[in-house]
Length: 391
Image 1: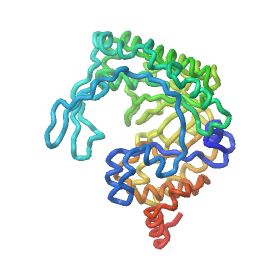
Image 2: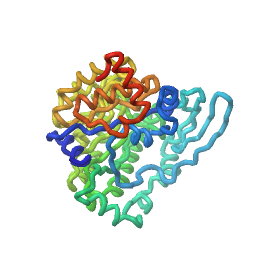
Image 3: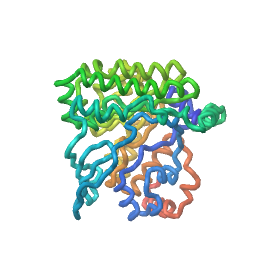
Image 4: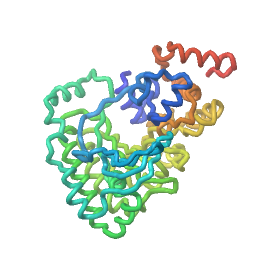
């Protein structure tokens, strides 16, 4: 099977030669730590890491759904310990230099109400901008021919953007939560505008290209659940998801997932009602247990992720136990297992290699020859053999 055939069949609960070999990625700090533990220095970003570890690749239709232009990134203040920056979303935040840059301290958000929406954000979310549409590119016919070629071997996806996660980024958690209470008409207007934009931009691509999946981003949950109630989700979001997912389904794409960290349990039904039938990355520590979700929803929901990162931190026995725990459900189909968030730096390079070995052995995934032949990998695995820890 090609990667594309395997991915499509797996996501439709059909037999495959082996489970697709994918992972989510890594924090920037993880590379710095792993370089000290044996990872080559030149592997310093997610794209390089995917090639290094030999994961299967995907392809994507090049649409632009977010802010255009983005805000200009500026350094407002800098000391030995931190920078205060304005990021490309217009958010003012303090970023520390001691390795905790993945958790900035947010100082000010640009979306405060209707005035900022009308004057600052709507002009940057104009659906008429030609740059948003791949059909305005000189290579559009080439893109179509490539992805529609029966021999194209990578799954083809398209972004469906965000209806609430982006608003949370622009207004902040408290800002968007209060807005839902103080000005629900504005929230409804903003969500509808984002849905209008997505529908407009993806429509022609969906008609002219064989698209295998749609992928969204909706980080709107914490450990205790979603920012807004399921009732509000059904009011503001579900009908607008449906408008987007109907376009894809009418054109043969029936796998549509969204990226949301935290406890997503109360979100799954509203998402399904809106045509979103896939969840990613399924953060176990936050209460999103993929096994409980599989038992409840069966083949109605596909899963990408769901391997508890805490097992990789705990060590080799915990890794084996975690893969054993999910194995029977992964083998049912409709589940591509990988770590349930970007891999943090407290996972050692050796534990991560052990995890990949266990996962690949368990699910019949061929071990990439180039990866296995690397001196640093051979050296680490020889220690496992000596310690009777080999998979």
